[in-house]
Length: 437
Image (tube, rainbow, N blue to C red; front, side, top):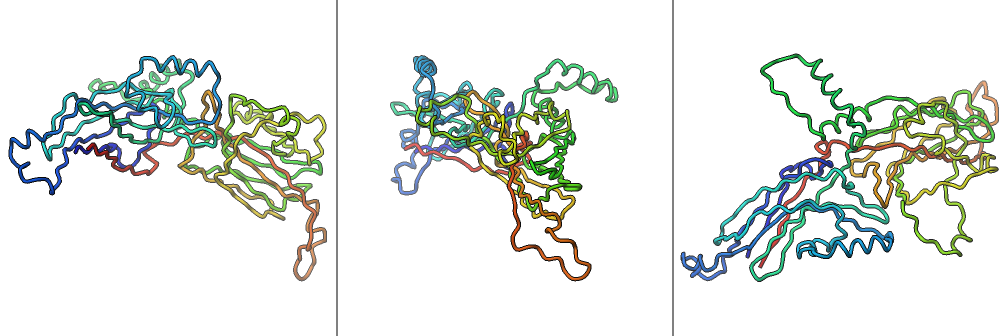
């Protein structure tokens, strides 16, 4: 019996970024149990009972599971690709559809193990930059696995899968700026003829670019109002965040014409299908707009257009008296609420909003089938009663009325979430094993 053990070299985190190197240690051990006959202790018996593996290889696969229907052309292409594939490819097709695969690396050929003997091999591979991140959504899933395959003589192929999590790193869209940046850094650095110049990898450039994007402060202000008047002003300090950060904003209710009784802010993930699905005619006739009603919110910061926060995403609510000339609502897709912040803010002039971003979620990304976005979903409960509808008493306590007429208005503000450094996310990995009898 042969036992195969695989463990990632990075013990504190089984998370990698696109373009990063994955390293794995693979052990092959000939297991010997105590209940075997005593004759196996002799040398000739050991030679006769030695295990023989014909070959072993390792490679990285990205799988996709989806409920979206594919066109006939795609199915024809898939059938054409199946021609000439090896038996190992057919085995790796079991978990799902392989969309990204690295070249297999041969670990050994004709390995012979004596009872109790162990052989260890080292496997390393770069995560493809063009692959999708690890994502588990409503209608589609992307996941990565290191596939370790081996075969005995006159036996079937045995595989061991080691799952890993992959985070997307944006590719630099303007590589022509790279030489300028390098030359500038060299000019500012102290000159030393004894120091060797080290080449900067593409991954380091991407991390530096990502750090600059998420650290840049660009406050944007949004005026919140409905048909009854001005409600407040919201300030978002930056539009781009990383996993593990807090989305911090401020709300100013000074000089308001409509009181905000309470509000809630939800961090929601949108899963939008890129390929349209066929819809029956009777469904189209009975379909009603499912888009969220949002209030009339005007941004007076023109810089928000460059950051992706544009006025097209700020729809008008039917409850705010702007239902005339209403355009068709944008598709919301599948929504998942990740974090929620709720406050009671009646008679509050200023307050802050803090919404945490968990480390286990998937950042913003887009593929040929799905577009994953993030947004802040606001729900405001407003009333026209100023100071509870009664003047403040000179003595005693001010009591709130038993009933208060309120209205609810909602607003969606898109934000961009990027990946964090995988070393900052603690996710200890385990050892994966396979027994070949």
